[in-house]
Length: 282
Image (cartoon, rainbow, N blue to C red):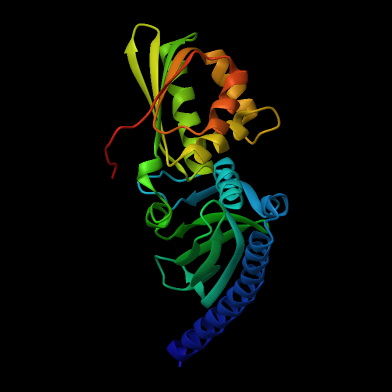
């Protein structure tokens, strides 16, 4: 009889906990759906209100580390810059579970498909995806995106239009400060500009650094210039860039458009343009 009473009490407690987590799952799923709706509307500022300041997020780029709130903001702005007519269709929403107990914990996850138009090429996007959401204080606190970001962006590339920019610079701060800033800056560009193919800072001597940038085409470089210009998405980061480094000169390899040359001119950086004869990129 004693064991039966214990069993009944245990089942009642489990039922109460499960009921609480079911309500929490319903609430959090509604929040996640509202968050995606704002993504479709490209309302970045409203999306930012859903983010917990201490959040950690799994980014979809190969080799990416867990992102913080600023990384997610940059990624959102990058998607809105690159795509239009964004639409998410859910296959199904599922309750998340505690990995230790297997009991629902109130988190939510979804399998579905993103559809959009790539603004620069006009190509249609159909991307299967998985997303998970954990909430804290009514804000997105943990989770991530799982989809083939690299494959999607690769589908838009015409490597015959690739632009490589080699920037020679001197550094104005300590090696540790150079390393910390370079890590932050390349991470910001990586999350914000999917059409930037590569961004590498290399130490080439005492107080000298060479930055090698690869872009899918001239339009991708123009996007970067827009972002670093006054009022751009990373204009403050670029102001710091100019304190950390002094740009001596740069060389652009590829068939650079006249509009890009005009955009570079106001920066008054000694620039050499080297056209392509033949070649390929992978």
